[in-house]
Amino acid sequence: MPLYSALFALLLSWWLIGCGGGSSSSSTPSSSSSSSVPSTSSSSVAQSSSSAASSWYRPDAATTYQIQLQGTPSTDYEVDVYVLDLFDTPQSAIDALHQKGKKVVCYFSAGSYEDWREDASSFPLEVIGKALDGWEGEAWLDVRSNALRPIMEARMNHAHTRGCDAVDVDNVDGHTQDSGFSISYDDQIAYNRFLSQAAHSRGMAIGLKNDLLQIIDLVDDFDFSINEQCFEYKECALLSPFTEQNKPIFNIEYQKKYDNAATFATLCAQAKALQIRTLYLPLALDDSFRQSCD
Image 1 (cartoon, rainbow, N blue to C red):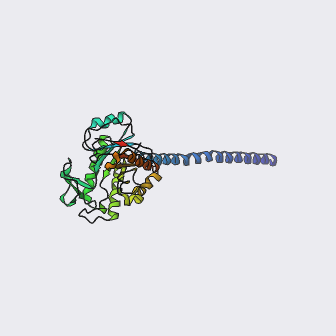
Image 2 (cartoon, one colour):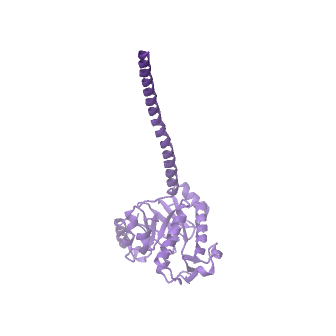
Image 3 (spheres, rainbow, N blue to C red):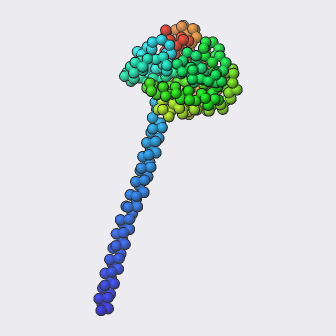
């Protein structure tokens, strides 16, 4: 009996050890599998969310462009991007450009009232300020007003519905202008960031139009710059934060002196050195002539 008892105890101990090892071995993969599934799922959700939030068009500093805001759009230029009016451009022109593999940036003024636009009646009188000097039927807007934001969101919706890849929002430097309102630097920053978020949330890129004094604060929020006359006013250095982030600068010059071939060649040499995509165009932006440095 003692022998049998000893043998029984020995066999029992071996059996217990074997079961314990099996339990440990099986629990490790189970634990690993259990924790990896939520981790993968959580990661997938985060990646999916991140992808959706970053899915808009992102041009780089080498991107070429054409801008035309009046007249029948010319769509035969060998460029990457066309900037066209949001309201006046025929849908057929936008569709034709997309069929050619081009991107379309839709222009509208986000900082001024234009009395000829189809949504002009949407603007409350209290948000309409002083007239823009030299631009008939146009007046500054009070970008501090919450009443303005639904109107701009409706314009963003219209751009999205039309298939615009990006928007060019004009007159977003009212804080530096005699607008009739006390718009502070921070008021303008808040409004411009609202515009950026409105575009990005709809899957569209957005350009910062002029507003040179706020570039350092806004370059992370905008995908490209559209500037007028930085060479004429010797302001091009202020645009460099965009180039430093490999974001394009689309510049327009209007001075008649560029009719001279040598003068235009000098302009282009300077523009290429600074990686600024520069066009010499008529002030009307009607494509009556076009000279490109690219």
